[in-house]
Image (cartoon, rainbow over all chains, first blue to last red):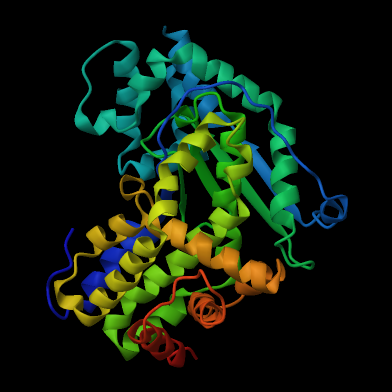
Length: 73
Length: 313
């Protein structure tokens, strides 16, 4: 998509928002390697203040996708 | 899985996000996964889901998901410890990290929902630490989104002068990516995480062309401000922020926030979350005038930043 038309503020806005702002994406190259353990240095004072933050890690899509592929392997 | 179970799979939030990400449909997702196991040729639309790659590496993928599942609590604890410190004391937030199998992206989010983030786990090749730190980077973006709503500011600024739109957007991203790189710094983990080492090595070239990276950033922003009618925004964004160009704006942004934190302490990160990204650039420019070894932006660039700051309501 190009933005070379003079005076197309609306088009630019729409294009920026649709192609860039709509998705925060990072593309990283795949690599191989060992199985490192998670290393974490905890600040216990910090952890006490974390009650207001809830993080969920939902693996349903990954598990069910693999389950389907496995059942038909 | 039966057809009815596959229908449930399609309705999962993670699957729905994946379909949106690859700009496809539920029917195409279903046909893609069915064709892969039937070893039938895929259309270009169906290939976007990358099920063929996952199917061909099924055992490794299963082992990796099992390991992530076993480490789920540890991952969440690490993320809460790192990200919770940036949350205001009286603020509550629930963020869901969706682990996906599919698509061409290792991580993405939709700005209409800052409480969710999606990761294409098939990219991470058995590297739990890589997943954890990448999640930290992306979840920090959700914190940034909560902290400062720049969209109405951008609207006002663009109304004042449409030529501000692209440089303002890029300054915002310079801050977003630079500070996320600083907060989720992969360097301490490169000895144990091949994924993060690969990322670090790829960007390391910027260390040898520090001044050139800043020069590129400065002059691209000036160019699109001075010649908005002839710019190609996709190219500019790609040159500054894409992996293929060694992410020079990620590098420059991280260098800038690192200098500011060194000068003003970690609280600079907290303060910056509530302020417009223009002040981040202004603060750096002011600091660079007093410190040796920091890139000094030109007077013309500073004037542009000052003009945009004067438009802030």
